[in-house]
Picture (cartoon, rainbow, N blue to C red):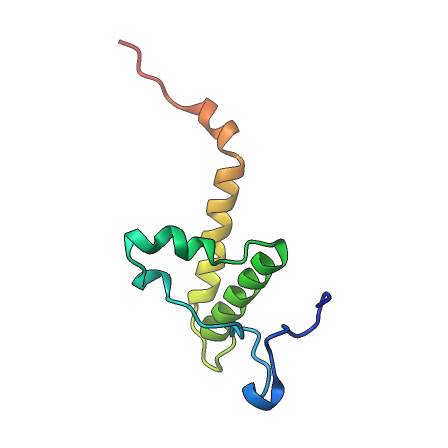
Length: 107
């Protein structure tokens, strides 16, 4: 599987048109339904390769895009979400500089 190819598990005869927001691999228990004793086994079953991580991020982006940005009558929510995420990101990367400007109260 190279860059830009369909996932190996995808079969157009079985799945129909390709949806970038769908995972075509074997279904597993959702994280919300995993018990604490089974958590380590659940994490061990995950594919932790860089390609799998990039695929998960891509699917999350497409799910968000289909839900908030691509509907005909989307609201202002996706714009506020992008603004809020960028504000948090820039706060985190500039925290070292911001932290030096704290007001200390000496007793």
